[in-house]
Length: 383
Image 1 (cartoon, rainbow, N blue to C red):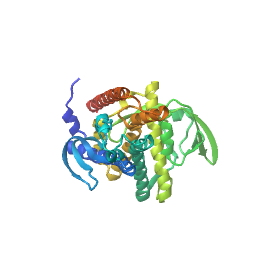
Image 2 (image 1 turned 90 degrees about the vertical axis):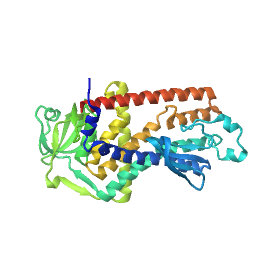
Image 3 (image 1 turned 45 degrees about the vertical axis):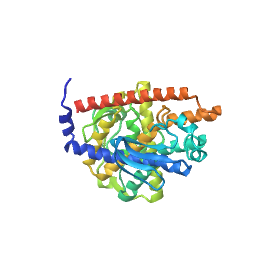
Image 4 (image 1 turned 30 degrees about the vertical axis):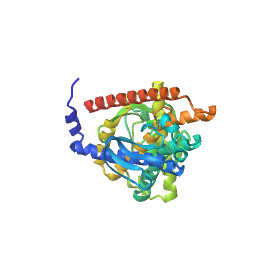
């Protein structure tokens, strides 16, 4: 199989700048807030931060703040890191040799000499910052732009669809699914999309009466507005676009924060359900994407405007925060796993055990990156 990679990239719309600029914008926001979480809690715990870097590799430019931290932008913009006093590498592996010759004053500011609780707080602060960023973005969109709500009223039912087989009719207003209140067509779509092959109990209002319908969404491949293919559950119905069924609601700050938290949880829940489905064989692993896919989607979403792009940043922030909590050595979750073992044992794991763990974690991360990149290239070749 052969294909023209550059031709495919230019076909995304706008050429290289059309996808790289939005990609870097989105990724930089997410990475900055992740590392800022580590940085702020470290400072709060009295840990000296040596470096705050956006990107890896050679430094492009930077400066020192009044606390001696080097803030810099590096050449490979696919992540970032903060390096503490007592770290051997950007992955916060401890420098045991340096720790042994530290002065008492240096030990007070060293990451490795802090309590398990303090180290755990610093490590967990990165993913937590990602979740807070996502909630803030979702809430801001709701407050300043409002939320367009289309009622869950059915306009058409496709012949030979799951909806037709279940007995839905045009004009039905969906009120609950499996006991959950449905306030909009989007609410219904979210439940249906993740329940392909599962029987749903749907309550509709029809001619002033309540009717219970048993429906089983069919698994279908659908294309979004950018041509990306997704496998989701569908019933085969369309929404009503009548003026009475469409409204825009402005949201007060408190409600917006609550709704932002709910949206963040939805992304977490959907991600975990998908990963669980992959291991259970219910989902295909080819939906896992890496930097190329993120760049492609960023460029596509950017054509729709700033609000969709910043919304993508919120979704990506949740994903990165969640990924970093996985108990894989080298990631934040791996560090937390080691600290949990240390707290239970009363002493840290041996240097050999930690080194072995980091090597295994590194191998897992590399394999995941290769697999995701392979998926991206196949997706690019067939799009």
